[in-house]
Structures are given as C-alpha cells and as structure tokens.
Length: 215
Image 1 (tube, rainbow, N blue to C red):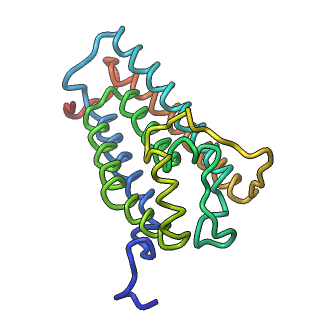
Image 2 (image 1 turned 90 degrees about the vertical axis):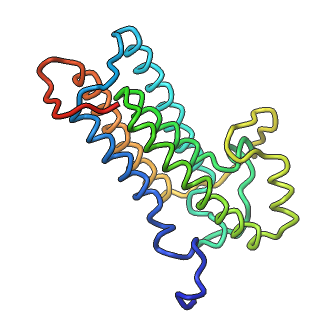
C-alpha cells in the first residue's frame, strides 16, 4: 500500500507506540530519580505509596502476561487467525494489555512518589485513549465485521474490567513465541521495578545526589 493511503495502524509510528510511551515515562523517571522531592512525604505515606506501587505492578504485570496467553500470535489481520479474541481477559475489558501497562506505569510513579512521572504516565495513556485505541477498534471493526465487533463493544467495557461477564474456554491454544517475548518483557519490567523501588527509597536519604527539585 502506498504511504499516502496508509492508516495510522499501518504506519511505523503505530508499531513504536510502546517505545514512545516507555521513553516518555523513563525520561521523567530518570529526572525524578536525580531530583529531590518538591513535596516530600512522611515515612508512613511513603510506605503506603510503595505498597500500592507493588500491588499495581503485580496486578498490571499479571494482566499483561494473562492477556498475551490469549492474544499473542493471533491478532486480527496478523499471521494467524483473523478472529476476534473475546474470552479470558478480553471478556473483562477490550484492552487488558493497555490497562495492565497503565497500572505498571502508575507503580513507577508511586515508587518514586513523583507527580512528574504520574503526569507522564497519564500523557501516554491519553495518547493511547485518544489515538491508538480508536484506530485499533476501527481496524478491528473493518476486519471482523461491524455486527460482531459492535456486539462485543456493547457487552465489554473498554478499559475497566467487568468481572460479572467473565468467560473462558475449556481449552485454549497458546503460542510459544508470544509467551517467550512477553516473558522477556516481564523480566525486564521486574528488574526495572525493583530498581525503581530502591531508587524511590534512596531519593529520601541524605547521601543521594539530588541536582534539582521536582514534584
């Protein structure tokens, strides 16, 4: 297809969406790590923030891995089945991978007790909500048919899980390559999460180099 007729989902920008969002959050996280908190929290509230961060990270990581079990390697228009995945985590909400990523980003902000990082996470999430997800849904609607996709949208929320309508097949086929890729991502995220939690604690110590102040 000529570049002038490409839709956003067919461009390189779409395929780099995760890298761009990660780079934005990562840069703001690095800036927060090199700064002193503009609004320092008491130790009790730092403990609460750290605990909430681990909860968000665990749920987000598990949701991403679980979602990959169902969608990895079988995306509509991809190399395998051209069928809409509507079971497992995709019966809870239509974008469990993105929701899991949002929870992981929120965990980084909580560990660093950084409003700056939280704003970066929200900015990335806003781009997904206003650009990426609508483009993906328009593509899916064309590929699988309006009737099937609209029925799925009516019964399944976009982001926040609805456990009342959870369904799962008795048997499912999973693709090893997709699982290996997600396992590598999960290991990198776990290492980054542990490092961020440590840096978040060190940020409040006297010996940590703080070059400026950030909220």
